[in-house]
Amino acid sequence: MKRFVLDAWAVLALLQKEEPAASRVKSLLEKAQRRQLRLFISVINLGEVYYSTGKALGVAEAQKALNVFRRLEVEVVPAIDERVFAAANFKIHHRISYTDAFAVSTANEFSAVLVTGDPELIALQEEITLEELTRQKK
Image (cartoon, rainbow, N blue to C red; front, side, top):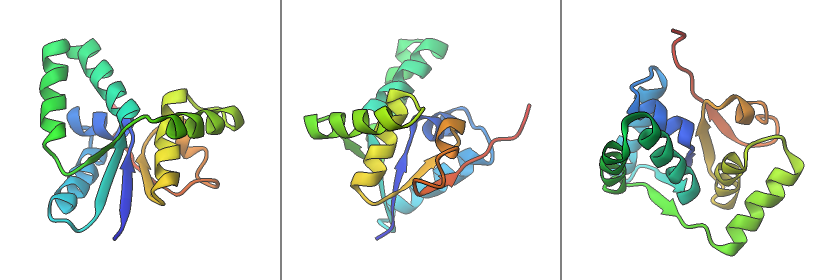
């Protein structure tokens, strides 16, 4: 079964209705609900979504978004020691944020396609398997 990892960029694009990225993420979520594919997100990246939403819209909205997300067919991957150090090791060798390193290491662990529009990660497309999302310029 095909596997995908969502990073915070992808989830935020969905929440902010940034097209065409939002439609692609919605499509992946719908296919996961029908058990046509598996979706993952690191709890660290989900924390970034919570933080970004809370900062922009307040904690109540962040909690509401988190509650909705947790009901979806997305496997939230916990930050156990091995995963933390795998992300740290990736960060040692690449110029990406520590949070982004969790998305990459999660994709590597599950042999999944990383779904993102983050320019830091797109720059690594020769080294990691990813699907590039885009949003219309404003």
